[in-house]
Image (tube, rainbow, N blue to C red; front, side, top):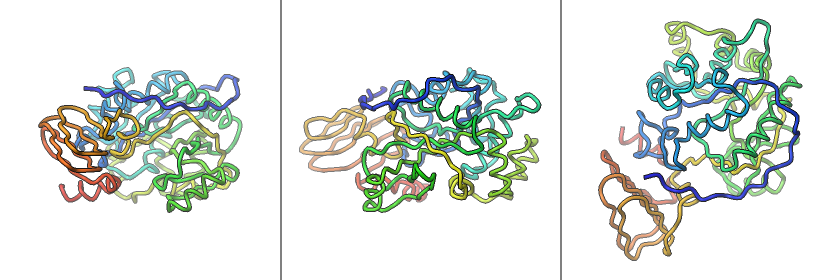
Length: 352
């Protein structure tokens, strides 16, 4: 059963009302969603979960982009194993617009592949603005997101810079990278104390949204990640793409390109963004009982406080425990201390 999502009030910043130029949107959907195991699995990762609202996160992402991009201008870069699932979930998109990577090589390769794919349907000589967006993030205020994105697209169309949308922090999180909105400098995940200093200085969260003209992306790859430059220039055949990927290192777009750029432009966003990166998100968006427990499905809790219980199969029964995450599915049972949900990859690696 889909759980309700509690609304978060967000203050939508005032932005330009000029119509944004046409642009192509690329959804990055190759993640494995390990931090939501066992709800999320390799065959059906986090972006396909219908947990935060009545639709999957990837469906919500595609709907947010409808106001700026026609279906023929929306692309998805995913893994080859998820091609069929993605095409079923986003059936309004042409199958050719959903591209499967032969193997995971992180976001730098996915963005380079997205550039060439988006350009393949462009007219000769056209230099479209292309935007890249993660498939597994939550946005509470879609109208404000649209206004912010229009501003970013317009800015990108008039400059030779990569534009990123920085999220106004609502607490000093050590789990996110930060951006200096004045200089465009990217800062990796800090300690809690340093994160607090960043928030005081007006730094923004890095949400991994990048917008620029195709020529700007291609030049950035040529200068700072030359091994990926051929991937951004033209569409490769499946066999050539596989051979190309086999030689690539795994590296994020942040490390490969963004940290090296000196002319990044930042558009602040305040639209209720959340990467819902761990089970801790259930505490933020689901209702609690009087003891601070979150329950979904058949759960019995006695003298227990602050737990997250998600039953998709066997009933969960807890007595006298605090601050646990307990999840049951037809295939697995998870029990983890709330304070360690960010370490889920350790457990998933051991299970494999």
